[in-house]
Image (cartoon, rainbow, N blue to C red; front, side):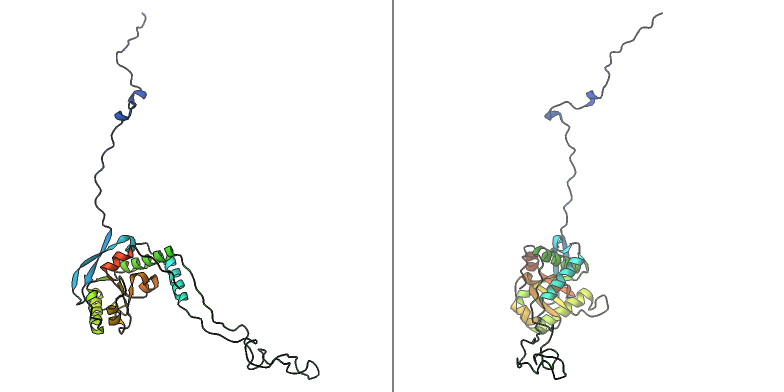
Length: 264
């Protein structure tokens, strides 16, 4: 008996029928992602008044105080800075510059002595110096971007060591040494309990101001180890050369628009 083929009314599902129909309006919508939480782009440091009292906190931008510290760049920036501070003033005279006769001191032959033509020769006492030092000016250059990055690395290093403190009310400073000395003692005592990691008293501090403040400079000039610089004059060497860094809110605001000056 012949076998009959049974046909089904169901349509076969193929791979092409599973594809989305063409057309812009029929495309599947994207799944909405949950809103991202706001990022905290600032560090907080304690702020103290002239009397040494706590007066809130100060936010520091992470793009300046959270850089990855590049030690090779810092070493290069410090070498450039220290070399440019040197004054090579040592100078000696050659045989053409010393005072003396130009005549031949004795005849060429017949004396039994070595032949010489000038008393100003380096072999004689009072003669010129061979390959002696000469006063010269050595200046090394560092690109502005590298200077700025080195400064940010130095600030980030201080922030990692928790050696940055905020200050407020410097405009009201009287300019007296007693007032600034008391402030430095109170801030170091509060922040470090008067001692650093090596169990030694804090020996140096740098006050960073938005511009030059004569009352602050006058108040700290007789305190050893304490100095003050405006924002446009700070550099990686000065930041790393001090144990404690004291900044004002206006100085932090100017750091983002900082323009590095060329060293002369």
